[in-house]
Length: 215
Image (tube, rainbow, N blue to C red):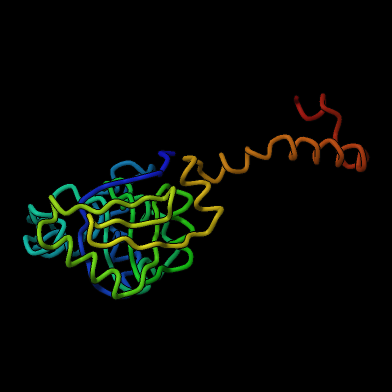
């Protein structure tokens, strides 16, 4: 997984509360068996114009379709971002699109957990601080980029604003070191091996000989 230390990028405001996982990626867009390619379905209901169920083109007014927010990699949003179902595809779609961090007033609990496991940084900030970041970016989104510094837990907006944030330490460790949940568990491989060996010795009656296991 790609490590997250310091990231600078264009920030796009989608200032709504309760953006749920079906809005992030509708179920009709989840036609792949891998994480790759799901970015095309991100915010599909808002990014595209439809004729019935057929897409007929981009929705020009949607922020991520506007030239000023081309290549946006940071989102600003409201309360309870990523609420609703446990759909991990929502995080996969965001990362596949190129989003590296989301700054919001709060997140759905499962969505936040999925972010940490997939290299996406979810940052909680108060409404007034997000409003200040939005005002800074909207002047010139391409020039006024945000810097998200996970090594120091800060969001920088040029020389105008610098806000600190808190994040779960386990998520921070995984993001800084580019670890997914399996990589994180394998850091304790020696402890796992010691436990398995002790278990085999204490419960030999319940463990098949290695030859019977096909080892």
